[in-house]
Length: 181
View 1 (cartoon, rainbow, N blue to C red):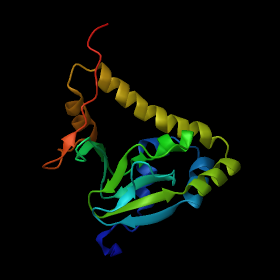
View 2 (cartoon, rainbow, N blue to C red):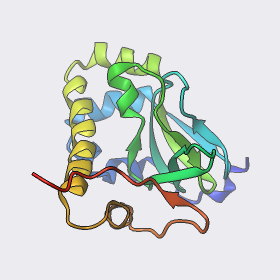
View 3 (cartoon, rainbow, N blue to C red):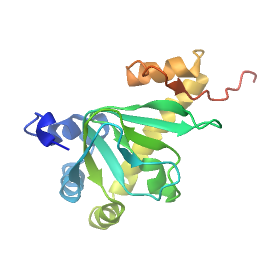
């Protein structure tokens, strides 16, 4: 894949501007960046698919990643999109269970990748990163809880969070909602 599609002379500026990353201490951010590598994915390329072993965390630098899972008829049910400065893959970081979703580059995408081995090394060098990764996961759980508590149908809530319309032909996964107390 040609890397000339990416014009930012400092792609890591996107990571540094992200909400979660900007809350890290200087020591945490330095060791995280030192352990990470910039990777590129072509449109349609899988970062990981449901059932894959944990391969690390990603932060989108440019482009977009679609999170989805197949339904019973093997059609994609879109959960949401990951945009620049947003991270993905942290669920499997904590339980080291297989991936629960497919993560597919929707567009030519540049990513910061932190491999599983690099994460283990990072946690040795900077043990406080365990709490930071927990905060990353907790922030996403709060979005889900907010969506479940909202009076809006879940798919509308997802579209508001990702601030993008879903691609033509994509369906959003309907989550079961508790309607009585």
